[in-house]
Image 1 (tube, one colour):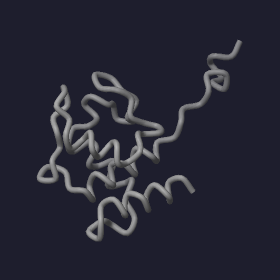
Image 2 (cartoon, helix red, strand yellow):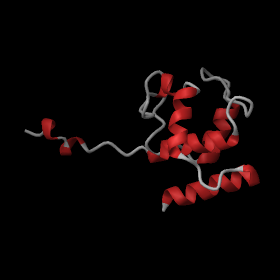
Image 3 (tube, rainbow, N blue to C red):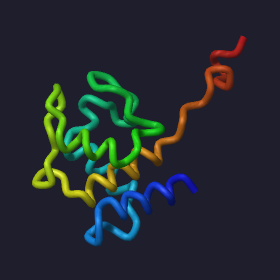
Length: 110
C-alpha cells in the first residue's frame, strides 16, 4: 500500500509527463548508470555517502535534495536525470527490503 501511495504522490508531483507507474527495475539500472552506487552502495546501504535505503526520504525531499545539493554530491538537474528517471530511482530505493534482524541470522545465534 505504501509503495502505491508513494508512486501516486510521485506522479502528482511530477505532473502529466510522469510514468503511469515508476519502474524499480529501470530505477536500479539508472542508479548504477548515473553513479549513485559509488557513494551509496548498490543497495543504498551507504558508504562514502549516507544510507538512503530501505525507507528513503519522502519523494519530494529526495527530489529537492538531488536537484539542488551544493555539498559533496553534485546536483542532478533534469538535463542529467529526468523527473521520470528520478521517480524510477525512488521506486528502486523503495523496493529494497529491510535486512533481517541480527537475532534472526543463524550464524549470529549462539
